[in-house]
Image 1 (cartoon, rainbow, N blue to C red):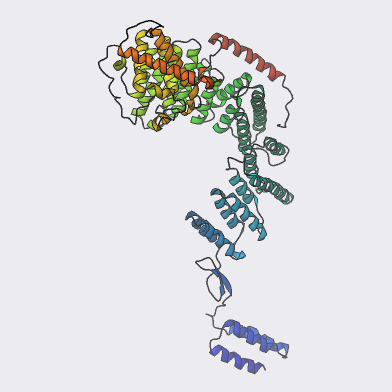
Image 2: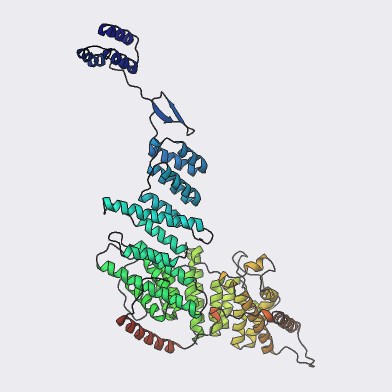
Length: 637
């Protein structure tokens, strides 16, 4: 039997048979009712094989179209990282469905959790949240257990959603993901409490989801659960999300009603409570660094609170950003002053009626770090100038005009032109300061810089019609109803007849009907002639323009009294006709007169001395509150 096996082996080997066939034949012959000693030939048989003989395995390989082909091939199995690269490439080529189909047709050996995380991330970045959820379910169905990165990816994609009002199903999925991650983290804790798989990233993403979904109670529940955790303590991102959520909650309350103000004050109080917890963590050597974004979110919340909260915000700006009030010495800044942080700091000044502080900070920045400023910052300063003018200061209009001229100079001489270029709202704010200061000369100069017209062409004795604007039409900015109402009221407040006549010629040139069209529906050019900031008050300023123009014509005494035969020039007759048009507008709109006064139109109460006395009282109140703090609830309702 063994001899025959040897003959068979020789025959097979001579025909260059495959390794699989040879081994099987030898094994069969050696095991067929032969003595045990005969089996010792098997190692000899294997040694007699040709050295270049290789075992050919049965493998699965992928082809270009993503299908699986089983057969006798030498190509190796596609590795997961290569599959991830191919999926990413397909997705970048806008072949999303093909990428999903390729993954589903791949054998399990070519897949792993990283591959699934990759395609889930791609779906989330494309805002295909339902697809990402379906892939997450399919991943678990195929036996791949989600890890910390999977939950972080899913929740991070969901945190990018801004409006959750019609996404109740997606929000429910977010809650399920958070519960799933907590269960996963507990499982990891049982094996290794310090495992990096227990991460704050999924929890911070879920906090962002609850904040944007306006689920404030759940947001605080998640935050409080972190306070009770032994390992997962809040980090800088956690505190930033919480403060940002409080800022959003505060900004949603409109109006000055008691209920709205109570919510804003509660948000500011909660923010100060969280800030104290943050400082305690830092004192206990927690690895948390206060950055500019964290300071900015805190200032944004406190700006809507009580005067005592405003003082706390100024203290934070002095300590971390190095922004001190005039006469104070600030420590070196520990955070970088970003344009956003500086903008919110200036907004805080105006909200808290610290107008001098606002203009002081802007002047310092104009001298030392002009590259930091953009149009928004300068608009805050111009708002402060107008508010100071409302308090009786008569020097703010020239300063506002100087700020405007500085902006135009920076636009022309630096590479930041599109950042610093004045807009319609900028010119309007300068005109507000001119109206408050009764400064017609500054208002006329502002009009010249704004439109390109020359003011002298509208003065008494000017020959003919005014010349066309000197600047290109694309650069000329025509006033809207808000700007024109300020211009007309400035001429009226000046009390000078020559200024009033000059203003009436400007209105006639630009067309009164343009400013009495409260809806801005005359044409596309008129629609664009309205600053976004003042568009919602278009009806108010149309009424102001009409009433001020009537007073302007009446002050010149050109309107004939009843029964009076008064000789008028052609120009004066045009003014009387404009007055009649304004009167007709007011009669037609008497039932649509606005009841709310825009913020810039409000008469600010008190003087600078009165505000200083109020500050002293607020500081004393704040000291009393700090010495006798009330018990703060950790729940937010």
